[in-house]
Length: 458
Image (tube, rainbow, N blue to C red):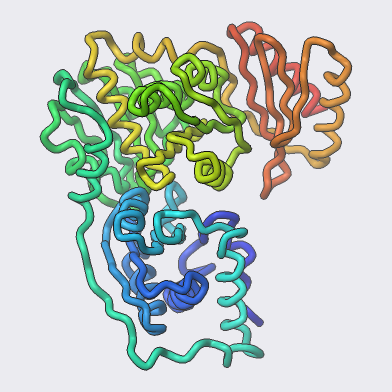
């Protein structure tokens, strides 16, 4: 029997429990498969701080090198640092991380040269099929023979070049002194932040900067409010100007203001969009997914740009950025994508924009972001539903005849009116419906949210 990779190979990456679902022998086969599918003569490989990451990434490198591929190993890095290396070196890349998942998990995020994403439709299916064939006793003899001349394994340190590239994309020359608390969650932010922030007029208060893939303090998932509590408390105790929280592989960044209140990722998207449009002469396309706040397209238009709405999911954002030549893209999940970063996502660059915006004026962050946070949102609410299609059909029937609303089915069902909207979309992997609602004020949002939930859960 071939290895069962159905639970290991996801839509956009490889992710599973080590060693139950995969180990170094399987990682070596993934390295060989990646070499064949990309056809590359050289690749770059990096890894996060999880206990299993050095061994897995080393095995992957050996698998590729055995087929004659030259491998540059950049060692400990954030995911966006790996994207930097892929872009700057123009090489396909592999990042070993399970992002915010618990310690027993690990995974691989893959990209082609120039940090172009590899997902199920862009090579991951072929990689999975090769590994399945090679682990099947009936077809195991199809494993490719080693190259006559194996590839080389070399090491490189890209951290300073990565930091310099990001700093060149944001004007930080007029930033006033700021006190910033950073919660790295024992993840890769503890590795990248000191170098990226070095020399800036910042008083840095580090929280959980020790690299520890067992996550002894809290999960490295700032999307869960429970994991922001320590940061919020420390910001208030320190009378800091703001707080930043990074996830495990430090490609996402969450922001809290001087009061310790979370700043919506939609507000950060709008703020960065305005700044990127200004950098580009007041014109350009900005991508946002359909559950970001209405504030985002409003701000983009006000600053001369063209907003483009996409489905939820980074593959859709990246594909649309490449198609349209967009200068920036943002998601509700705090992923931020930049044309000047090979259309890849980097929370660190978004953080530098926030520091530049705050440090370039005298007011507090809460006042600054108020302009970019104009509506009341529900956040994402999940409901377990056996008949997802039936519930969506019921919502469509309930609102379909109303003259004051419009319906669209770009991703699930979005119901829109002049001063409110909600979206209901099914999970791809679980029997869930996900609801996001927004309205001009809290009372109306609550009413719309509860109406939608009643239909979903009836």
